[in-house]
Length: 543
Image 1 (cartoon, one colour):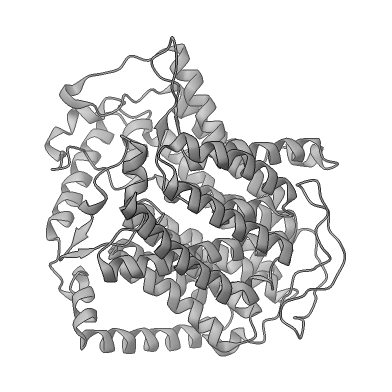
Image 2: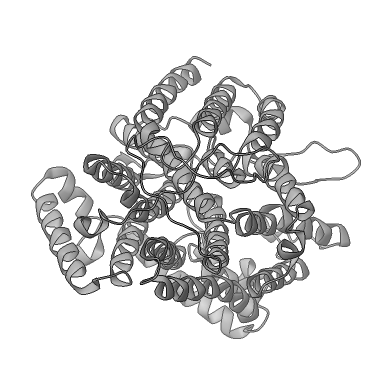
């Protein structure tokens, strides 16, 4: 308990500083009442998590808080994204009587049950219910992928090749969890973000949450102390690996509340991509630069090479498909070259660069060998069962079992193709590629008539491109999975909003209070008077 209290003090102090310093920026995108409520809920649940001896005590407090706060919030998606990683993912099996297992419960599913599903229900009962209920091409692709997952049973990788049998109950469980974990998330984000203001506010809420995790991650890397490690262990989650197993060159890889270093790096890369657009709404140049550095400091603290490359891909894609691409690309490349040169002459920078293979690094070279073997073996098995995959592929990959006792398929595309075949892979990739194509076309169409809204689309498209790259070197779990579907939902919402142009409003002189018409809230209340603020005068001077 003493260790948890010490960690809580550090977590609380870092978050308090970040929330206080980021408040003027956050109030440019959301009402003060929403910001204060979300921040207070974050603190309440963080304190509860560190002091609760069991997950069920945390859930007892979190459930009514989630329900109450989300109903009061004018933007449930922004509320969801800020609280998505208030605690790490710690799946705890629900106690049952008469049956062997129901399903695990964690903070993700608490948010789904308490925030997303009630919001989806209100959307279905709203005046736009007919529009919200219509299935789009993206809905069909996602539901098709869900059907494949439900029909094809993949036994878990258990010791001694024990194969669990499938049953009608298992099929119902898979269908239910697909709805709870995946479809309802995409549905709510794509339908609830019905205006430019709500999309931008959702991006800002996610960036605020990531700013907190980034600073916590920097502390973890500097002090070699994982602040959230004791929570899952104390709650008795059997689904967690040793959190301190993620060490590289003697450095503890930061993970904060994201659950792993890779997941934290993935989240921060997306946040940096969102900030490429949001910074154009912030007047003070020092804050535009500071927030960008905050996200990159956290990225470096994760020591996750794939997410560094992903974040760089997002940045250069944003420039490449935006206005004045060529001169901005040359300028960005020159700045990146200078940054790499400066890093190479510092001990810390040299250590970081040594982990990148294209700089001649040999750190953890075994991971590259493992990935190569994984790719070769996966391709062999995919060729044997190309259409619907091989649901028993685990039993044929024993030579890839690692020291942790697991077969780590760190390539999402290979994982989908192995177990669900090229049919499943086509549905999975088609879903996100359709979103990318629609967003890109919309942004190009609006480039002249509404350049600010076009840049929002460019930011979303760049993030999707970066995600498509990062999941090729990452397992599809934790925040990786959640933000994949959030991005797809935001893309769908963006395309829908682009069909109904909205009036612009200038940035207020105070930089905190917004003026405009009242907007209806999905949560049942009325949001304070506000409009979105859009100004691109600073964008040209930035990159």
